[in-house]
Amino acid sequence: MGIIVALIALSILIIIHELGHFLVAKAVGIKVLEFSLFMGPKLFSFTKGETTYSLRLIPMGGFVKMEGEEESSGDPRAFSNQPVGKRALVIAAGPVMNILSAFIFATIFLANTGFYTNTITEFYEDSVVQSAGAEIGDKFLSYGGRRLYEPASDLTLFMYGEDGSERELVYYDVSENKKVTKMITPGRTPTRVRLGFSAQVEGNIGTNVIDIIETDSPLMKAGIKRGDRIIKLDDTEVFNVPDIQNYLNTTRKDKSAPLTVTVERNGKVLVFENIKPFSDFSYTLAINLEHKRGNVFEVMGASAKFCLSTARNVLMTLKWLFNGTISIRELSGPVGIIGAVGSVVETKQSFGQILLNLIYMGSFISINLGIMNLIPFPALDGSMLIILLIEKVRGKPIPQERVGMISFIGFILLMGILVITLFNDIPRWLL
Figure (cartoon, rainbow, N blue to C red):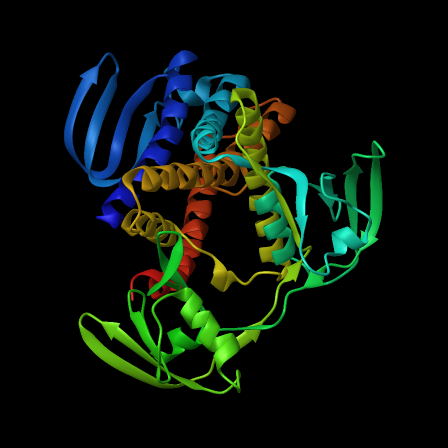
């Protein structure tokens, strides 16, 4: 059931993208040959005016087919015969629709759940921000030269990319009515012992059922799979994530020693021996920020900041991929997205909470689709906008056949990336 809902949700976001292309193409007078829901063989279609509207077999995505989009055409209303400005509007409309829908989804979600602000409400032990002179009630403005838009998720991502170097901290001192800039070194959490998995959530508590297994984690190497229920660590019964963390980090005398993991899989009890956990730590600023509910204007402002934050995080992640901060083995693709959305549906929460979580994920995925499509990579909308810019500078059109070849090469490269993400996602979600 979760996978079906995930496929439908992802398809809706892709259809929203294609709807943007379709509506603007119609608005500027370009001849649209077909607008299709889903892909593959045609199941049903009807023609209204010059456009065929079709429903296809494979319930994934959709497409818009315009006259002269991939080849030259003598029709004056063909895409290839339109001024650069009109074509750019049509190309940009898809990503813009994704960004707009992300804003709407985020507004619905934050109106119901509230949002974080940059007001400091609490310092934890040994907070480097408190040591820098900040006080409760001050406003956290930026870290490492990056402004905080959506503070909670921004700080999480900033800390993920940390290397322990000295960073610039900027906060607003409310009592002194001024900005304060300090250089700080982020703190470190205590070293923790882990097995490398995320658990299914029930009532806001992680259960003992494995939801995601990290790549190259001890559990994956041992043959433990997604959906297995961890029932014992050595001779100690465990029922949820707190039990597991307590045993690994408190109960065991030798925390680095191999252990025996007993799981339940499809009614059978399986024992995996000699599993060696790993240890790590994370960087932290040891602060808590205000969470509030606001009026409609505050919610819309928070939604816009959420979109800005997510867009920046997409670009930061791509940068980290190229400079080695994250590994290509951490990339996720359609299977991972479907798995993540499906997990939300399968959690034992109320229908309203599941729906809100789906709306949140829809917003996050939609902004990712919009920003990724604006990247100037062949076969993506961003590359077409660059081609149109070159055409404008040259003062003459680029042959559609050549544009088609560039798109084809890009498509092959994208398929290669898709294959890589499949090898990453299948062990996490399907095995």
